[in-house]
Image (cartoon, rainbow, N blue to C red; front, side, top):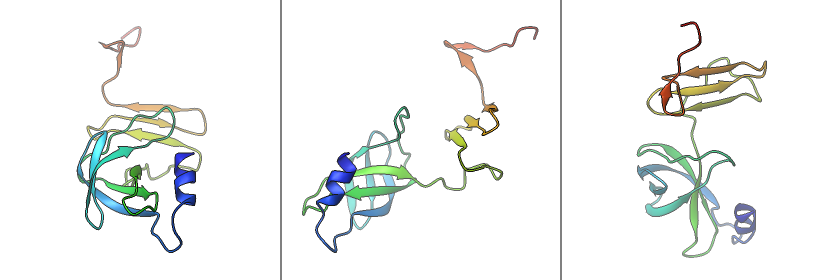
Length: 126
């Protein structure tokens, strides 16, 4: 709602969004667009907590006011999507190599070291 309300308020001809590169990662990130913007709020889809890393290409949304509010709304997938990924599938990944891939056929693929309640997962019979 914030995004739609603030994009509607922008003046005609004003730039409402732009790509930038994160210079300082984290929940209150800094991004280099035409100049460096600091302490930007980070938004992600519901149920997902995400913090960009320094060097990530991100989408910065602006409200259009002179000293307008800005936020980071998304990041480039940067070629991380699986080659055979189909529309409707979801792939979550982290910089260290862990990933969860939800496929349309109901398959859940988990890569990385798996823990349950802080303990390493060991399948029964292993």
